[in-house]
Image 1: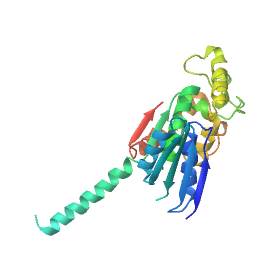
Image 2: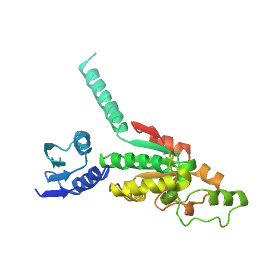
Image 3: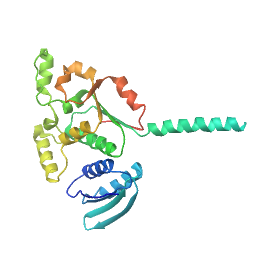
Image 4: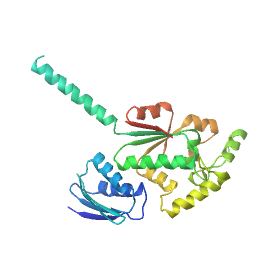
Length: 74
Length: 179
């Protein structure tokens, strides 16, 4: 199970979600994706995305402007 | 009811539920406007839906066709009125007006600059991504005929059709937008 780190900083809506979705699509089931974004809309976006697509999200951490999430491909 | 009849009923309901759930999963959109800001909103929503694993269909009609024109489009081989329309309308994403604060074309330049500074993805990139990742774009054949727009005047990788082509997709979607 591969772990991928995605630096999505500096990107604005809809790019963080698009890049993350594209990476998750390419991966295999069980792969872990850690993504960090400084887009203020990223948190509600990623929550809605994970809920809709069904890929489990194991945590959101915030430090300053940076929002880091971990997604496991279902 | 007998057990068999109940089981039959459950099976029937399950099949119908699967059908309904499948239907709410797609997004269809009519892009009527050729305004930069509205096209931007349309393509952000379309690409977002694609990222959420949905099938997306955009039916492009009337002024919306300006967005998907090739910048190299010319009036060659068209009649006088068609040539006039070709000359007067923007061709492609770079020269679209904004719906508010256009200021005879200065507005869009201001917005391009401000959006570039905030590192917002360009309309052209959103359009390219849409085509590349399989968003179905259907150009309205009737509007094309009216304005003398030929298939080769529009970007590659799109389809052509009429209202039934759009409705066919729309009946299978849970979200349908008119922009």
